[in-house]
Length: 403
Image (cartoon, rainbow, N blue to C red; front, side):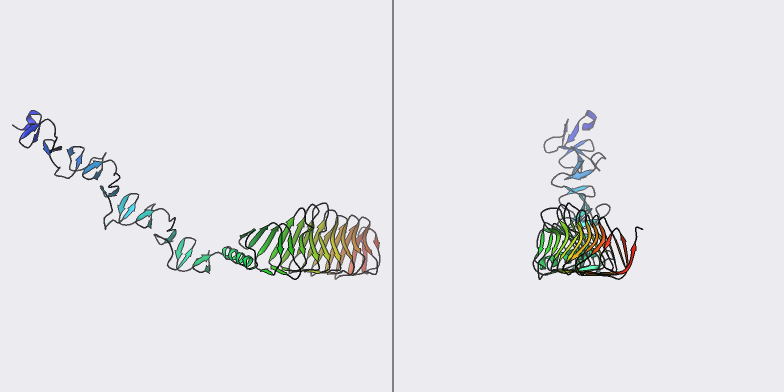
């Protein structure tokens, strides 16, 4: 009779109630064996295939998941390393190539994105560098339309190229800190003194503080602005030369917008000066010169434009809106413009010396006098529109615009 007929298992020539010792595994539900013929077992039971609940084979044992030694999965078998026909790991599974969410190859690992040392995308591979050029983190053979400029091996946008150029130009001018660069805009925090020539012709300069240009020094810039509220005489204080497209100075508190002390401003666009506080001129010249397309100045309480011994040339218009006086010229000042509009609570134009030549129209209003001319000062315009009292001699058609 067989062992199974008496409810026992065969172990060699003996019938036993449990498989133990050197025959610990049960084969076919009847025989205790030293090793399963299938090479697979679920617990102590030999099986031809692993059950659904324990689908993977780790060292001949059916398991729910691979362990720490044989931690990778090749098909349904746990292995310590992947075979040569499936050399890559995708979420712990050996594969022939990367696909799905983890489509990029970083070393032997399939990943969703390239990071760290191997941050560049070279096709579907992550690399530490690119064979030719790179755009962002993508390897390319030529620069794409959104990054068309080549800087060494890096494709850049126009903004990125401008940022590099502006940074290099600032460093070449001796400025290595105190500012940030974004695209073609340099923002300087604090008072900035130009003590030697600085050429940032393709860059915009924004100074959060006073911009001071020393005598004998040239600042060449695209657009320049300065804004300050306390403690300094003017937002822009120029004793040298500023060459720019546009220039704008804004002061508040007791600060003027722009002061020129025997310096020059040469602008192809507009020059603007604003004194928004309790004191200060919009634009004040103590000698020197301004040349611009249009000149716009405003002072909340004082003089919009003060021209003392200076030369002002506007290829377009001058607009001077003063708290007390719109335009005050004395001590040999000279002004030339296409049109001038000036207003103030006391005087529109106060001309005590020098020459003012306007090709077309002067429009002026003032609480005391819209226009006053004396001490041999000269004013010439095609038409002079005035609202308020007028005093002195001028050449042009005088039209009382308030009548």
